[in-house]
Amino acid sequence: MPSECKIQCCKEQLENEEVEKIIKELSPRIKNSITNTAYQEREDLEQELAIKIIEKIQMFECRDSPGFWDFVQSKQ
Amino acid sequence: MKIDKDSSRIVKDPYNEILSEVIEQIKKTLDQPIMKTFLEDDENVELLINAMEHPTEFNFNKLDEVFGQHLQKARMMKYLINLIRIYSIDFDKKQRKLNDRFPLIVDKPLGDEGEDETIGSLLATEDPDFVELYVKRNGQDLKEFISSMPLYQAIDELTEKQKSLMKLFYVDNLSNVEISEIFEESPQNISNIHRQALKKLRAILGLNSRNEGK
Image 1 (tube, rainbow over the protein chains, first blue to last red):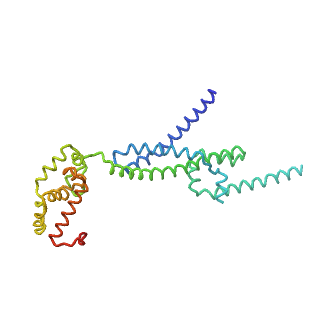
Image 2 (cartoon, rainbow over the protein chains, first blue to last red):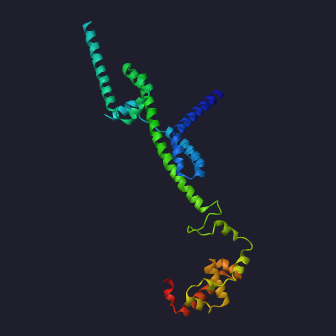
Image 3 (cartoon, rainbow over the protein chains, first blue to last red):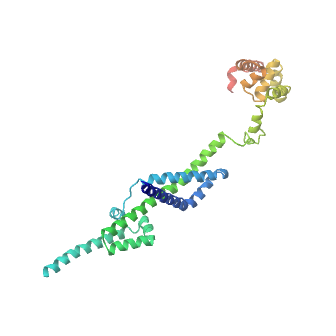
């Protein structure tokens, strides 16, 4: 039971790292888009965007995508 | 011996054919943006070469899996980039609306034509001195604000109460309810007095009540 728990924790942590990486990758775009709003709202918007991204990444994880051979075949 | 040689050739030939066919197919997809970005990573190129040189099931599946992940990530990134752009615009709209409805700054001007009146001054009218203030200002004559001669004369015909009511209504921009508080009467009564005053003025000025809107 404890070992199972440990594995789950590890998995979660990995996912968190992944999400963090994605947010870091997107951060120039976030920094750019927060200029769309007033100066005093920017910090709020940045946070809201991060929340939205995390939500949407979880949504994406449930989706299937074609593999290499499917892709090559579909483009014949 | 002879048969063996033949069979090995038979086995080998279709295999090479399939491989070259696969390579042809891959070549066709090389101009696809997703394939370009996939092959930008040296590790992925290595996987592809590996799969071609040693076409084992493991190598094929590995390539398949990595490509699937790459495609999924590319899709997700595209979606997220769009999300960031659109969400930031929506967020700004929402905040503007909110600020407009629930302002936090009390010295924001009420009108845009350089008026001195601010939201803060409106709040000040909630002061208990509110009634006193208006009663005091009531000393000012309504006629001071009239520039039309016939109207100036016509106002003389009104009763004192009607005059001060008209002044509160048109000069101080008070509502029926606020005026009723000053006079300590019902808003309905204020409305009636107001209507009668207007009727009287119209009669004096020789205006038909049908011209009211014009």
